[in-house]
Length: 146
Image (cartoon, rainbow, N blue to C red):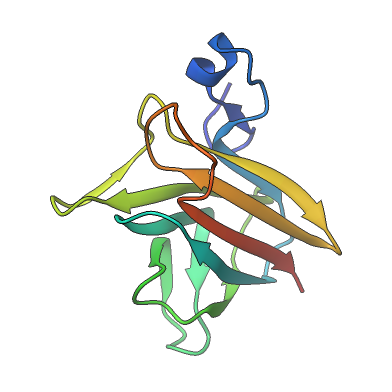
């Protein structure tokens, strides 16, 4: 499996009988695809965010025309809604949840992951930063393809 072109599920949650926890999300997109990311809720004491990447980069038109290889969007410093332009040759958007307990950005821990549901054309992600005692409410955000 090549990272960045296929959804990766959490092996540690699967071992506990929970098979729908996503470690690394991949969504199909078109080149120049516009997406809206919306932060819905944060239920953790730690700083929460998401990491987003495509093979050709991400642009945030409201800021500049600069294209970034990947971006970290933090719930506490980003606008509640962010419009991104996704540049891609291979047609894949990668993302996963990130957090900071005070020592810098962390991600992809043994027990981190996201549960996704589709509602009204939006993908709603319910995130867990770490630990198996979770309601998957450390961060809730949505992605909508425009």
